[in-house]
Length: 68
Image (cartoon, rainbow, N blue to C red; front, side, top):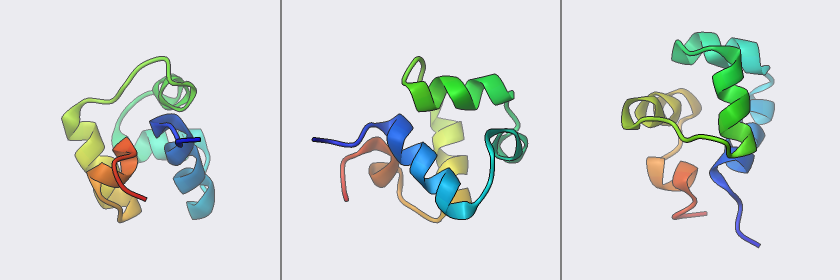
């Protein structure tokens, strides 16, 4: 089964040992936005994907599930 964006985001956040609130501060969004992303209720903008990619040190393709 393919991993969703939300699942990958949650995994990366946990690997880094941070909570939703800390990630929200890093990305300049509300904590509820992180929760919505992780639950698959909404998707980030391109600029937020770029920020996440840099923060976690992974490609946007990885975040989007286009590569493993």
